[in-house]
Length: 95
Image 1 (cartoon, one colour):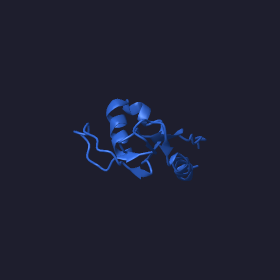
Image 2 (cartoon, one colour):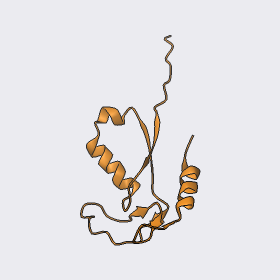
Image 3 (cartoon, one colour):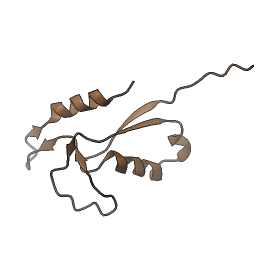
């Protein structure tokens, strides 16, 4: 009997951008990356912890909900909930 060595796929935490979702990012990767590459990776998708508070006009393709990782003031001088975001990501990382 041949000895087969089980090789684990590299696990990649995939974090979407502002005002999107894990579902949207997953679909974009499925449409944009070659299947042979996707088959070699263990992709883990995570929604940001906060529902989007702003209205976004650019979502003609994907349906809500949309998420954000943290909030900022209009002038981008103050950031809110950033520490909570980091804690959320850390709590959802898998071994």
